[in-house]
Amino acid sequence: MKRWLTLVTALTLAQGAAAQDLRSTLFQAADEALEAARTANAQLLAPQAYGDGLSAYVNAENDHARGRDTDRIRYRLNTAVIALNEATEAAKIASTTLAPLLKTRDDALNSLADNFAADLWLEAEEALNGASRRLESGDIENARDLAGAAEALFRDAELTSIKAQYLSHTRGLLAQADQAQVPRYAPKTYARARALLTQAEQAFNENRYDTDLPLSLLPQANYEARRAIYLTERIRSLVDDDWTVEDIILTYEEQISEIAAVTDLVPQLDTGSDPVVQELVAYIEDVHQRELQLQVDLEDNRRRLVGLEEEIRELDEQLGGVSQERFALVQRLEAGERIRERFARAENIFAPEEARVSREGDTIIVRLVGLRFGSGEAEIDPVHGPLLQRVHDAVEIFPRSQVVVEGHTDSYGGDRSNLALSRSRAQAVGEYLSAELGIATFRVSAVGYGETRPIANNETQQGRARNRRIDIRIEPQQE
Image 1 (cartoon, helix red, strand yellow):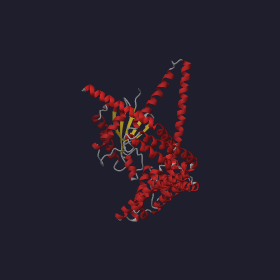
Image 2 (cartoon, helix red, strand yellow):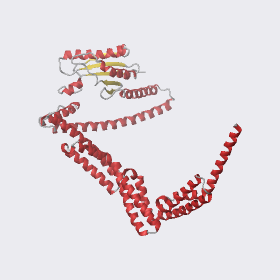
Image 3 (cartoon, one colour):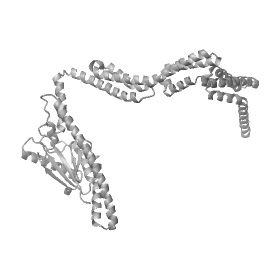
Image 4 (cartoon, rainbow, N blue to C red):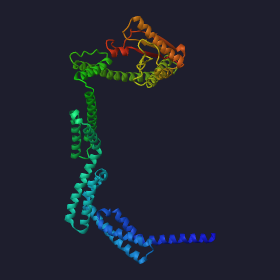
């Protein structure tokens, strides 16, 4: 039985192989003609002949699958070959005649017009099909008319697609703004967003392939649209809360005062905000100019350091590497570089709202802007545990360093009570670093300065808040 099944299987496989060989022989010419027609894009450029040839080819495949007469199959295949060859030749002619149209179609396709401008794309494809059929039948004049119409449609589809992809987000924001009644509450900002969108669309219309200008306009339009939506929400909120014009002005002035306090200026707003704004602008410009100068000085120092290193090499060559001066200089350079690298690591430990990290020579100063005490109190709130853990991490970057915890207060209150309070707060932080976080007690000391070392103007609320602080001084030791 097993042998009989093996023979049947072998016979079946042989019959299948024979049938496949017969199919390959019968269909070889038709397969080649079909491949040539598709390569010539005949389905697009010679749709009538290609359709006739493909229909005959499919019928031949169906006959072969049903085991029909071989002569019948050959007849159908011969018909397919003749029609497909005609389609190939017609497509080659059409590809030359309709070359500008085909280039326009490729541009539209590359812009994804079949996706983003589907209706126009289908209309253009129908016009192209009509032009191809007219050309195929020898109706040259009508073929040219339809080709011109198709080209215009493809160009429209391409532009529509490009604008849809680039402008859709901005249009969506403005539609959201319209729904939120933004034109009523923030008409000027809304109008700016609309105008920028119009300019971007016009730029696409003038040159769809130069996207630099519209792509620079659209982010501005998006910004203005989002800003108009925010303003509308804010204005509605103010109206609902019965805000007066005075309330709005006072809030605005309060924000200016907060900015001024950071710069240690005392704003005088009895004659309006313009003088204060001008003073702040001048202050910021001065700070910026000093920053630029510091950058120049830093670069000069780097160049001097390079020269110093070169001097060391020359000294080493002259003295054979035994100079004590050279050894001491190298040690200072290496120690300085280690401190700079560790300072950068310590600086990266803290978020801006937690601490400000700076240097005084080799000493690292961590100003704990995020550490707060209750009024007149020196107890550490558990919420500050993570911040003090980061202080510990910063200290451990500098092995064997000494840590000085400095307490400071504002000028409110008596001198003695402020001094005592600042000392108590510094001691509380120092004890926490030792007892809770494991920094050796001999490395930590605490000192209170009261109100004697302000860093901001005590005449403003914001300035006094900055003066109430804990500074951690990390003093690296010689390694």
